[in-house]
Length: 237
Image (cartoon, rainbow, N blue to C red; front, top):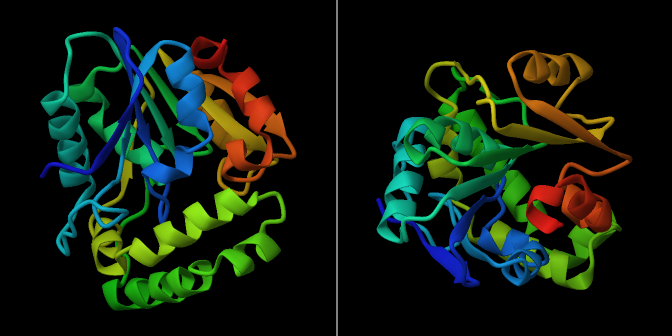
């Protein structure tokens, strides 16, 4: 399955951006220009069931990753690829890494684990409730005062386009866990509701590097944009 892509920048190196659950390629709207100015070619994807990409009610993490790899390869220029994934998108990146073979993989506030066995009907109901709540930019700015007006509009639009049926399928299968490759960085909030200290230590023991941003929200670049840039000099200088 080919996914929707927003492409920016020109350069020999390609950065693939994978958003979190209920986000979209637009979630990176502040990040993309910085990467383009640094000489990267940027591919910001909409994952299945998100943004303008296809819906798939029988989706698995394997088919999501395969779709990412197929989409990136369809736009390949032969240069090195860097992957940057947030939360659910980081999980997809971990699954895709064996085929995508990124020169560098950056995982943002993610444990590289996926818990399966969910009840589909209950999960669809919960996702739909969350989708409706997040479809209002005014509600989002109240709940997340660090959002700019543009951030809230982007995330409200992403929630409107989100398909609970597609996303719920991913959590109905078996449990998954991934080991980071040697060229892997975990950037997490500190403290993080998603990545515990034990998770961070496990990531480091498995060969990755952990960098923390004190006080950041789960979507780190929305709440602590400059600190997020500084945490990744490999990308942002």
